[in-house]
Amino acid sequence: MRGFIEDIGHPRQKKKININDLEFQLRNLMDDYYEMDGYSLFYQAIETLQAEGQLSPIQNKQYNGRTPSLPLYYWVHTKVQEEKWDRLEMMKLSDRFDFSYYERHPEWQTQDEWSRIQNVYQFLQSSQEREIVSVEERCLELFGHEKFLLDSTEFPEGSGFLTRIGVSEEQLKMVHYGEPFVFWMKQGREISEIQRVLIVENLSFFHTAIKLLEQDLLDYEPELIIYGEGTKIERSFSFFFRMFPEKNYLFYYAGDLDAAGYGIMVRLIEKYQNCSIQPALKIYRKMLQCAEQKNVQKRGQTQNTSYRDSFLQWFTDDEQELLMQLWEENKRIPQEVLTIETWRRWM
Image (tube, rainbow, N blue to C red; front, side):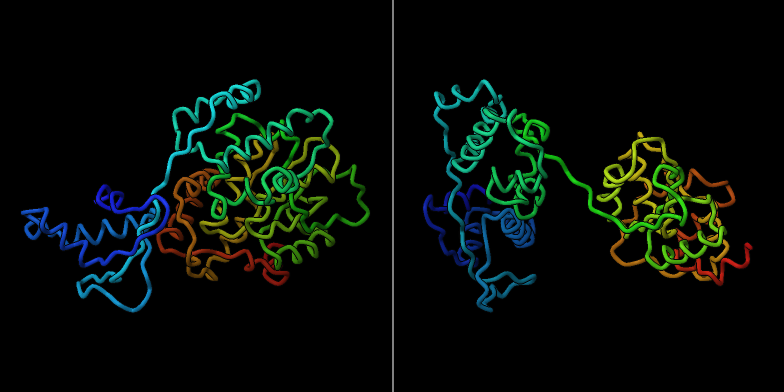
């Protein structure tokens, strides 16, 4: 089927096909078309080719009259023509780049890719004179768009570009700057006195934690509270080290008792292994005592059992049993169960 479509494709312009005509031709080529439920296979093949971008439906409310239905007309897109780079030009740039990947994958030898390589080569010629800037700034300079290396949906060719040419972000003098975050420092404390840091997932508990901190009622007695803002903390955590002096801190994380909350904490620990990050067990245990306020797991959350198991191993056997029961019931305990009022039961 794939070869059939490729044969139809035109090297310079897309071509319109009638899906019933295409199926008719395939039926004539296959003696056992009906015995093998040929239409189901035909339907799946069309869907696959559409997903791969070789076909695109013409939306004119005309269908092929079969079940499941398909649009009656499709565009067959132009054939991808392999472009070969000039080997002499490649040799001129080989002092900086290893072109072996492109030798093995000639489909990447396009004019756009070559232009990007030339831009990087020119930059590297004088990189020692350049300043370190953000990834976005350097992407705009070299590739014409600030998200080229960051947005794999809009720029699928960007996600592996540096790997293909064997160049690091350090060589391009660019860094990922952490996003700023909201934080609260205990009154009367100096930056140099900060040792214990509490990161909380949700805004409501951030404000509750501030009140508890100023009343000397907050677990771990942190000098600093950070509002993690859900998954944003995974991008903003590195900003901490641009604001505060380098030393060994104790980071405690408290989030929702649900799949997303488990994932945030585990990924933080995995990404920043040189930092002492651990779950705020005293706070999580208070949340477990408010299990009567559990509710249904949020839609769209990925149920990652690996994150769950990594999170649960911090707790006692009895606590793990309670957490597993929540998981199996598809229930969660939101951080908002901890209010100034509910906190009184532990005072």
